Length: 153
Image: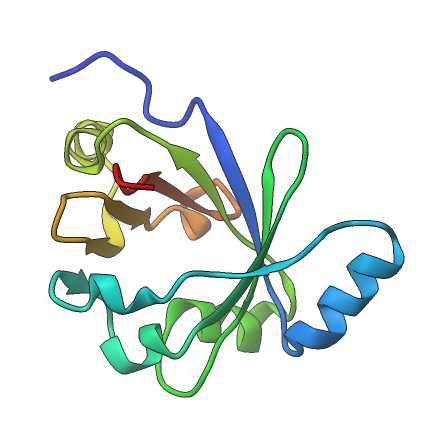
């Protein structure tokens, strides 16, 4: 078991929204941006543990790199997803905090040692990817996520 803390390097804050174009326009009017389309989620399709893979692939994300953190907007598509459930239950708001880790598998194992259960998980063929933990109702108020970058990017 590693003693390296998992949730130390904040990478992004993700806000679930109903109308992503309206949200981007609002943030741009307040000088938050520029906004970019998120890369395709198709790279995860071969190693994806989510309730509904089609719903996951139908999520629309946009992001803005700010000076100290990335801000993400997520619009759920059709189908069953935790993002859709959050939007329908809570309305628009912060869905998760994303933390950078060197490797997802090692950080996921450390999180398991801390008693955290996996909510969603995806890996690219090179081992990079993400894991969302089931923390929203356990006291964190939001989902905690880890992510490791694609080494080729």
